[in-house]
Image 1: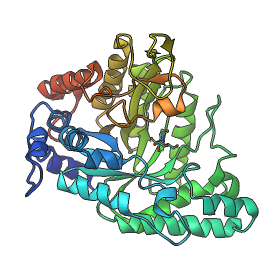
Image 2: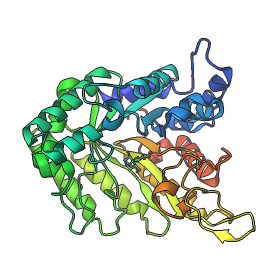
Image 3: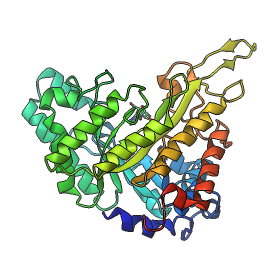
Image 4: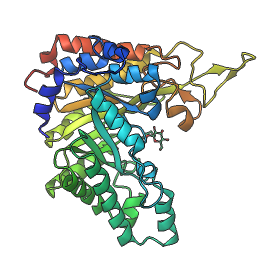
Length: 389
Ligand code: 9MR
């Protein structure tokens, strides 16, 4: 797809919804001129969120999903484990619903994700572990998986996260030799996956997606590894169009938006588009139990203390990096509310990572993004984002 045309086409459309029979509330929210999607449209930047099935069906959540965002990423519904739970038996319900919802609300879709070590179906991992699936059969299965899924949504996906999280977190970083796919099929699987995806959809933008690849690791080691990997596969003529930096930040570590800007610009210098694909900023959360004893609970992310203003700053830093880099085509948060966040279940005692609190009130993190977009809309040329983008 020609991204430039895409942006020109979509910029004006984001605030306007034509939705026969759909809830008026959605229409009202979507056409609000101070929504993130409307403000982003003014600077040709699509603002997205990961969405769960609940985000599409619950009246309040779906109003925010449609009203604030112009790109959706299925949080789990396009992962192999979900779409092919038994070998040869497909369940596209969640994926179909999300794509349909997005089209109804003038949103684009980031497909996520085709090649990842995680959330693979049991029949596949068990088959490999027992030797019932040989490496050459595994390669055929991956080829078929990519072809089936990409073809099914051909023409309806804006960006595909073709390959996800293939690099080590070490310094120096490298393609992970122990990754499920690399260890069985060799590092050439990365290039193959992009070729197979391109064969199945000539128009979707094909991305490599990972965390800490735009300076968030402090050392920039993971950026170096990602940069040389994409440079390498580009030199082989592999069809890769974009790099997605996830942007999962944690207030206990450092974050330098200047480095992020520089790194995104470096990917762009290879002729690639870039995107922030899974932004959130987590922190330790203190809560109190019924006896007012301070506890740290992995399941309750309601902070009892005043939110750390750094979280809003860091969200802002990531957005500004994206705004500054002309090639940055979307800024996506990994879910918008603390009640559904993946963070408390993964990082013990952490939470408070999203734009809205558990009661769906917008937090300073939301306001920060809104203000930055507003300012950018008032001075788009200073940020290098003009109508010709
Ligand atoms: O948010 C997703 C969560 O619901 C799943 O349980 C988890 C399984 O690993 O995956 C989460 O999403 C991940 C995304 O697909 C890839 N980048 C990291 C995200 C957070 O773990």
